[in-house]
Image 1 (cartoon, rainbow, N blue to C red):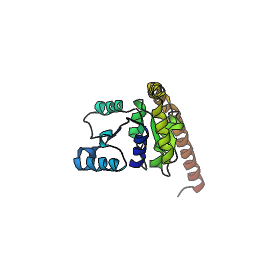
Image 2 (cartoon, helix red, strand yellow):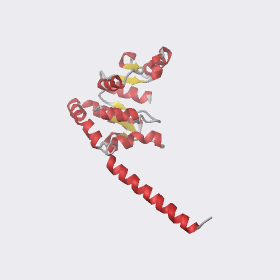
Image 3 (cartoon, rainbow, N blue to C red):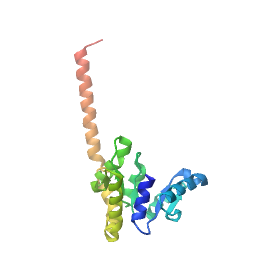
Image 4 (spheres, one colour):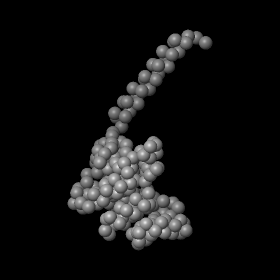
Length: 185
């Protein structure tokens, strides 16, 4: 993942990467990550490693520091990907072979952007670079993305609840039918 992120940074001049996680409060952890990026050819000045912030408002405000979210793998961001989309930040995600790896696909696809799904690290870099290369288009996208997310399949609860209720009714009917077939015990 670090190698892929580094390739994005190297391909987009003047870009910076912001990573935020509790372990970055520890200087040795922070330095270890900066060393990995430097080994991949990225100056540490281009990588900001932030620890956790005390309040949700401050946490969500950190998304204003980003133009594009790079969804990690093999465990996708899930909550952070939802937060990015809610805050108008497009997210590039990677296709994988497990649920934890593919959550990002569901989120961006249900927001209306299956084009942000990559199948290889090379495609991931390509998609991120393309998105970063057209600043006016990126600005327009960011201006409408929050509404797309809120009106998309992730936040449209009525169809989800209707489908879930249908499944519950089917399960209950199946249980009743099985109980009748088995008779009293």
